[in-house]
Image (cartoon, rainbow, N blue to C red; front, side):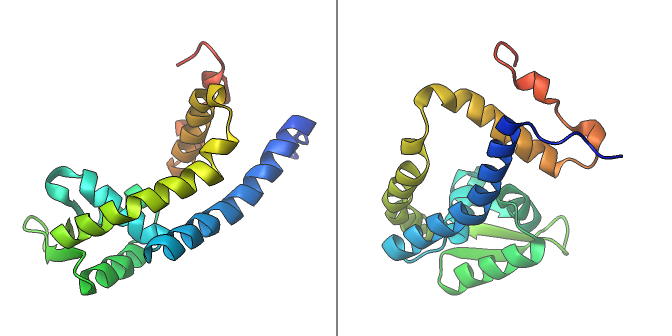
Length: 167
C-alpha cells in the first residue's frame, strides 16, 4: 500500500536531510584531518573513550556509541593502537571480547584536536542554526537516531511526542 506523498514541508526537510547525511560527515572529516591530522571517526573514538569510566570501553560498546560496525571499529582501534593512542586487551569476563583503553598520549591528542573540531562544528552546524531551534532540533534528531537503532517499529517514538509542550 502506497503511503501518501510527503507534503511540501516534509519534502524540503527530507531532501535537505539526505544531502546533510551525505555531505556533513565528509566536510567535518576533511576539516578535522586538515587541522589536526586525525579523522572524525578517530576523534569520536578518542572522545567516547575519554568520557567512559576508566577511559575504557568494550569494542562492541564503542562501535554502538559511534554507530560503526564491529569490523570497522576494530580497524580504527587497531590503527589508533599502532600509533600509541589506545591500548587493547582481552576482556576478563569474556575472552571473545576486547577492551579498548585511552592512553595518556591519546588523551593529549584528543585535547589537541578539540579546538579544530569545535571550530568546524560551530562553523558548519551551530552557526547555521537559530539558537531557539536547538532544543526541538536536538529532540527531533535524537528521536530519529533512536528509531534508526530500534529493533522494530513498535519501539519507534511517535513524532507527536516531539511537539512543543511535550517531553
